[in-house]
Length: 447
Image (tube, rainbow, N blue to C red; front, side, top):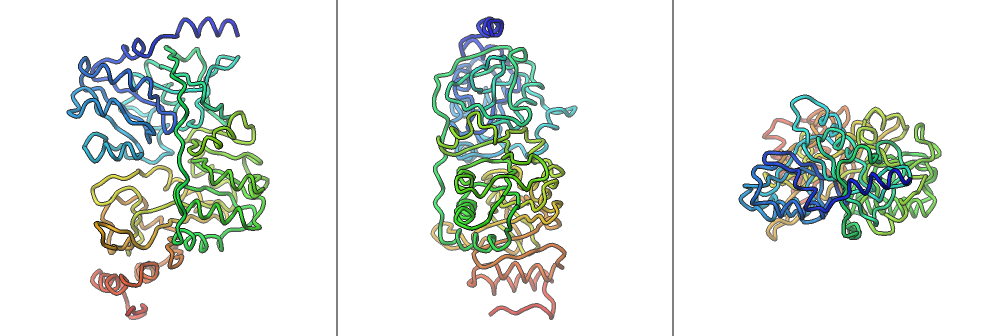
């Protein structure tokens, strides 16, 4: 340990000193989600007038991004994110955040491809060094080690409030791989308030509950519907459930504490609760700290659809913004306004589809309000980015029902999807289906 402490002290510098390694035109990669390196970000932003065209990238920044806020003309910094958070979305509305398209599973392989913009500098928040010289990535294993391994220079921002999340695989970096160490102000990790569950969410969850069985292996996204499903499972008599998800959140805690999840029926990672990042309450972070029943893996494992499919009865539950009459799913934009990202939605849909007995659910409210007017989320054709092509759509669920689109013709799909719309929009959608030549004489007529 003394040797590692000596090496630690040699590499320990101030944040202001560490960020001096960044040069104009560099790519800088930050760590992700609640592990956003705010100390290093703040220090780098102070160099705005001394640098030009530095490209900064992360995923789902859970702190205000100082390098973007300080430079509205983007002379010094161009900020990019592979999945928009609230902060990213606000910057995006001002033209100050740019999206990096891609499936979550591919983040690791992209860093290893030729002609990919590999980072010149990696800035990574971690837990304190352990006695063997390792820095744990906390609740954001994701593609963090791959980022470090592809970077020319690695800077670690140590925070004593980061939980040590047991692996898994690729959940830490050794001090020998680190160039500079910075001590942060030890601020608490951002917490995510529990999203309120509406009656509509409960109605959707009830349809999904009928499709679940003992021993199934869950992936839950974030949002009111996922919370509603989690609450219902917690209060049900389902047992021996497994957990293999990209995200660990507080819905999992409820299921664990009620004894619904133990992983005993999983074919791989038996009795382990697998995830690649966590966002939630302080209680969740404390639960994860040095908990050997939870396994943090890098995203090329958790989101590999071949790995997902190795567990029987894999269940994927995710949200969408729009679904059209063809079965195309838009989950990341409203028109040209970017909202979130592709993330792992397609990864888990494919994995659940390939799993023996697996099912993938895309959930959405049938309507939303826009400028005080009720509009339909079931549309003739999507008005945004297609996240899931029609060829891969599985179950679609609204508060009006559930439709399994696999193997269905275009005219069968159109009728099923219209049945999921709010009644006030069904006649209009039927007319659009006729206009698109999607209906036949066999189709039901709506009035």
